[in-house]
Length: 443
Image 1 (cartoon, rainbow, N blue to C red):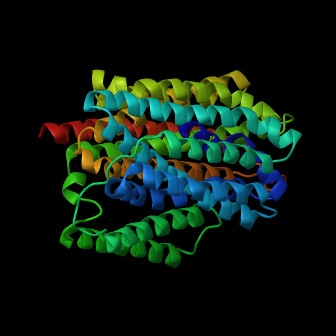
Image 2 (cartoon, rainbow, N blue to C red):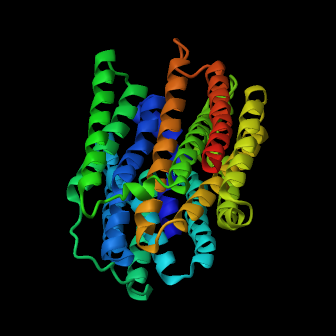
């Protein structure tokens, strides 16, 4: 299941330049296609985690997969951009499958084995990304881009049927308290307004007064959510759990790490696809997929060891190491981006570092809370990662739009240099966050 979901999520990465050309959209608008999925994921993940804790991970997971399958089918049949975006919205529900998988891991395995098992789940999800990256080009060029969504959807439907028959049921948590629906709606509203606002601000732009109004609206919704959670007998998110150093440190580190990774994921395919007459490489969708494949493989392998590394060295040490690797790689790209192998190597290094860090933070947070809170704790980290990747991608798109040549409409080389430098600074920022949170924990 994780393999099929990862495949469906990743097919857009190498094919995004192709879709931008066929649909006639700018890089920032192209980032919106992928981020539409992330918007839904950010809203659904915490709700899915809470419902999984309450009603059982398997039961909720099957329902989510039905929605994902419908979204994949809609995207596969989409005749125009709005229909494709709607399909992406429904597919975004897949983000909620990760915390549900972690619930099943915690309930069927001892705590010591959970960290390793979470790493395996993440590795399969990332491995699906490797599969999607590989076949997106040949499928879109040999058939059409519609089949990029159709084939993984067929696999998801089959995997769901197998899961329904083979996966043992996990007992729901016994509680007389109802679901905190006001908290669910307020948190979902906060995330939705934030993500949509982010897309608008970094895409087509908004007037200053509209930006101020958007910030105030997000702040008001977040404040209302905190007030509701503090007064509710059975809150959706126990703020005392969120206040634990292990949780909020993990959230901050995940956000910064994912933002840098999101920029890399967006910028590299764009540079590969630019015409070879200039500073680009004129790569086709198939070529881009092949260039990105080693990075996907590195991410898959690193996911499988992330939990082990966290248990052996501690999450902070893993994140700090990943930040050093990412920052050094991105700063090197500022000067070295004239050959495909340089970009391929950069994707391998950054993919490995980001995946190890994310899995280490997830596994350490999952085992730092009570078993009954595994779903909501991991879903909060998944949401944080989704927001970070979306922020990074949109910033990358905005930088390329701002640096576009007035005559050709294509991004200038200086725009990519700026993007690589900003990604390196974001990665370096995570080192500062590691240091600050470590001092806070010691105090």
